[in-house]
Image 1 (cartoon, rainbow, N blue to C red):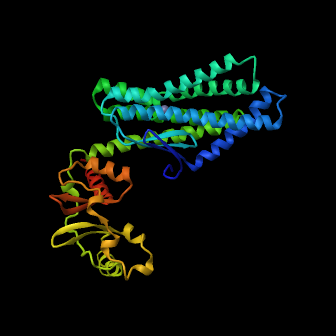
Image 2 (cartoon, rainbow, N blue to C red):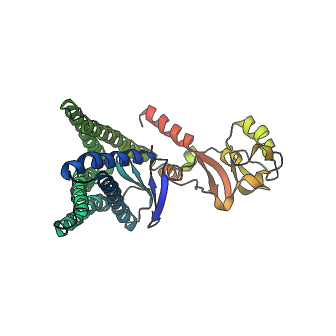
Image 3 (cartoon, rainbow, N blue to C red):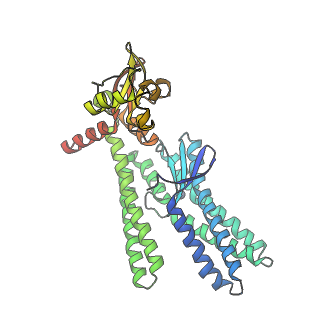
Length: 373
Ligand SMILES: [Zn+2]
C-alpha cells in the first residue's frame, strides 16, 4: 500500500514521500476546516478567507506530522539504525526504519521522540495564539486549531496499542523486564489488536449515534491498527525463525552460467525459457563478470535483442549486492525486502557459488512451519 508515493525532497539523508492516499485526507481536512470548523467559529469570515485558512492550516498540520515522524527517524539514525524514507499517507506518517532497535532503551527513546515533538509543536502554536490573541484573528484561529490537533496527536499516539508509539513504549518496558523481544512483541501486539477492536467498536457506536463520519474514520484506523499489530508480530516471528540459519543451508547451487558475448535473443530462447532459471551469473574462464536477470533484459527494447550481448545488459560484479555462504538468513531477508530485490548471488572468494532468492527463504520457512520446528 505504501510502496507508491510522490517524492517531495530529502532531509538528513531521508527521502520524504507523499503516498497517493495522502491527497484524500488532505482534501478532507481542508474541507472540514473551510466548510465546517472555521464558519462555526468565525461566522463573519468570507468564503475566500475560510478556504485560505483551511489550506494553510492543513499544510501546517501535515508539516507537524512530518516533524513528528522526522524526530523518530533522527533518534533512530543517532543510534545507528538507518532510515530510508518517511511517507505521509491517509492515517498519518510512517518511517521506513531498516532495522529493529537492539536495546529496549533505544526503542523507548525512539518511540517517545514523536509524541514529545507533537507536544512541543502544539505548545509553540498555543504560544503564538496567546501572544497574538488580541491582534490578527486569521493567524490566531489557525494557531489555536494547530495547537489543539498536535496535542491530540501526541495523546493519541501514546495509546498503548502496538505499533502505535505508546505500544512501542510498552514493548520496550516489557522487553527491558523480560529480556525477550519476541514475547514482549507478542504481548504488545495482542494489546494493539485489542485497541484496534476497541476503535472499531467505538467507531460503529459513533455511527449509530449519528456521527457517521468520525465513526467510520475511527473504525478504519482501528482496522488498520489491528492489521499492523498482526503484521509486525509476524515479521518478527519470521526473522526469529530465520535467525541462526546460514545462506548455505538454502541457496541454489546448481546455477547455470552464461558467456558474456552471448546475445540476448539466445539467452532468452536457449537458457531462460529452457531452464526456467530467472537469473544467470555471467562468467568466462571461471571468472565471474556479473549477473544478468530478467529485470536487466526487460530494460532492453525487443528489437535490440539480436545485437545486444549479455555483457551489455548485465549488472557488473562490482555493482552487485551479494551475500556470503555463512551469512545469517535473517540479514538476507532484511536485504531483499529493504532493497526490494528478488535474489542475490552467494559469493565466496570472488566466485559465485550459488543464488539465494525469496522463494528459497519462503520454502525454508513454510517447511519448518509445517513440521512445527
Ligand atoms: Zn509516532
